[in-house]
Amino acid sequence: MKKGPLTPKGFRDINPPIAKKRREIINKIADTLENLGFNPLETPTIEFSETLEGKYGDEEKLIYKFTDRGDRKLALRYDLTVPLARYVANNNPQFPFRRYQIGQVFRGENPQKGRFREFTQFDFDTVGVVDINEDAKIIAAAIKSIKELGFKNAKMAINDRENFKSLKVEDIREIDKIYKIGKENTRKELLEFVEKSKPTNRLTQIFEILKSEYGLSYQDFFFDPTLARGLDYYTSTILELKPDGKPEEQSIGGGGRYDKLIGMFAGREIPAVGFSFGIDRLTELV
Image (cartoon, rainbow, N blue to C red; front, side, top):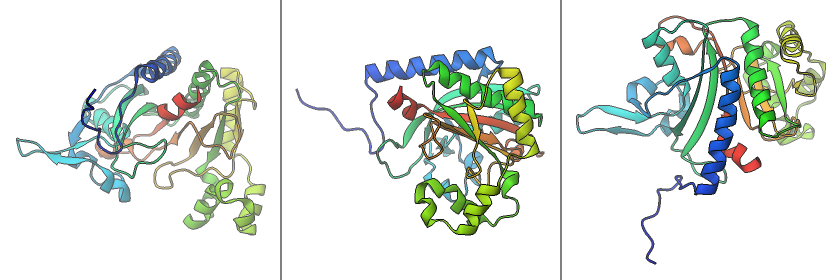
């Protein structure tokens, strides 16, 4: 039979068995989140270009932009966080606002194994409160969700940006890459810094809440002094979920507290903490 047109580079069809598997994963996570008080939210796939511009630094060049027949400058959404910020500013929901969202996002980066220009994000966040109980709820929700999917050995790596306040940006980035480049290629003074690092008072309190309120233990989470993530994004708690509990593993999701982003359209700071699952990575491993 004659073949039809190809899909554009970085885009793909998802065959029925994989699509079914993805749907089962999404449904199990959604059920867990709803049991913990999170509600679904949907936002448009297309936003005005100016809504997304100036929010992603050097990554802005990856946004898919176009002009429609009405001469309006539009863009495909790059993530689900900026649309969440716009929604909060326009709808003024009651705080704490706990939402989850599943949606396609688009980035014009170079495709490679496991990375596409269109992919599915599954985000959940609590907006509007600084209470560390909400950090604990996000962590517990992610751990309970992944256990429901059969990842019995999964653990959440946790750190606090406060631990890095005495370091230069380049030092933090080197620490964040220790497991990638190897300890033998990391400066001795930074290795010593990591060895001396301890959970902050904030993290100690979060750990106690995870144990007392959610029945979790150090079999479910651990302190990772090398974890840094987005330096311009997260403000305190930082999270990465490891499928087999090993800090050097590729994560299956990440997140943390970001108190300076959601209020970008509202003209005031609005605290938030959240987490995002990588559905493609999860589908590979389940």
